[in-house]
Image 1 (tube, one colour):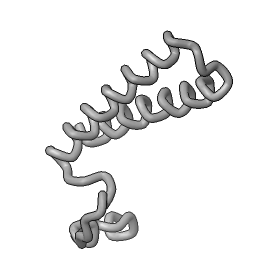
Image 2 (cartoon, rainbow, N blue to C red; image 1 turned 30 degrees about the horizontal axis):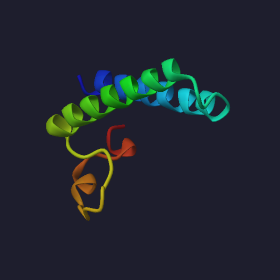
Image 3 (cartoon, helix red, strand yellow; image 1 turned 135 degrees about the vertical axis):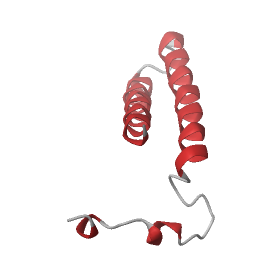
Image 4 (cartoon, rainbow, N blue to C red; image 1 turned 90 degrees about the vertical axis):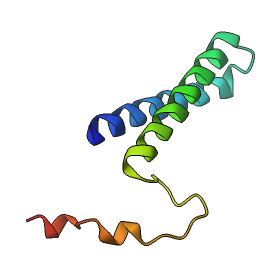
Length: 77
């Protein structure tokens, strides 16, 4: 479930990035702007869902050492 949510987050973020590049040269394209806002909303919803289940994706101004408790890649070998 964790990996699936991360992939969905990544997909929404990629779509937003690509749409922002398009909007840089097509500022008046209301359809592209609506798509961007749709993906932004989707991203926000997925991020909230992820963080409720698995913790914060970023610090967001909070200083936490929770990431130190996770196993490091070489700990799993």
